[in-house]
Length: 238
Image (spheres, rainbow, N blue to C red):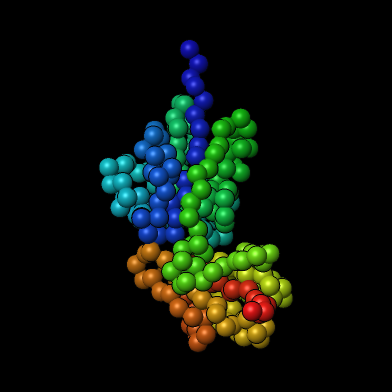
């Protein structure tokens, strides 16, 4: 008798605080045959794994090692191939990831490889609370109102994408992956007249967490930094 095909689900676990893990995410993990988490080394507990260990310590978690440097493509290929035996055996595999699996996540690169290796593989996702939602809540920033729009950009290679986005003064801008360029981001906001009200959050819900105003940020930070630039709202007549 042929085995039932396996499936892979990417589960967003939120930015860091285990209290932000959704019920759907938790139920999906408990129902899975296998839970895997990304890690930089076989003996290193990744941040997503640490969240699950706090929220559901009874779960067994396996690690998939990813090289986030120049050999990233090779690393994703190797990680995908490690999952194939379980998937080919018909297992339901859950892959945990910080934030949401569809927003700047390792999961999308992993599934790209798996689609090529197993074109018919069933792949789904469970959404997670994002870092910018948590930062808005913690900072008391009403992100959007009325007809305002939101732009989500990265500053991995510097503030160029941010500078393009903040031209629209009625748009809120969220910046991811800009920790090492935090002073340059602050300078770009100041030049554009968008520094007032801008906030940042580093390692939200994780050890070393920092939150504050972008004004006066003179030092770089870790990779996991989120910046919110609220819209410059027009004044409304009374």
